[in-house]
Length: 180
Image: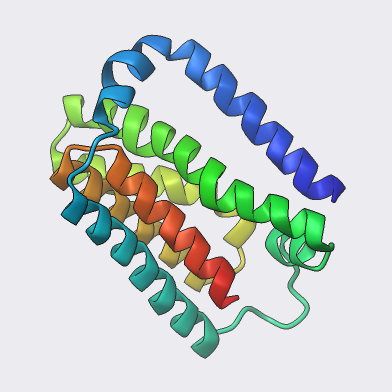
């Protein structure tokens, strides 16, 4: 329980500071882009679930080495309170905060200086790097996070909405939790 509380606390503090430091971006760019047409909502949710299913299948074919432990598995085995907090953090908090940073601030900054293709790929690499500590020894996990980052940036660009990658990310995380 201490682990999930520390992870949650660090996320809340970090992203609160980020929002305060980027308040103008939050108000002028991020919040206005939280609308989405109903068919795009379904596309985002279905995309996240489909990616989670494929990742789960590939992970079952190429499992991590025996004895490897990660934060996710430790929290899963820590009781109902920790699991409930894990669901809140991974399905609600992380997608909102991570999309604000990666498909919001970073993607938009890259897109103003480089091509859209480069912005999609570079933001996916940064997203993967952010998750490096969790998956550094597991090529399937790193590949999945990189490809998820590309899909999320593509959804962001094609819908011109921040809600699309947030919903896809939440659906992906929920799918991974459910299939684990």
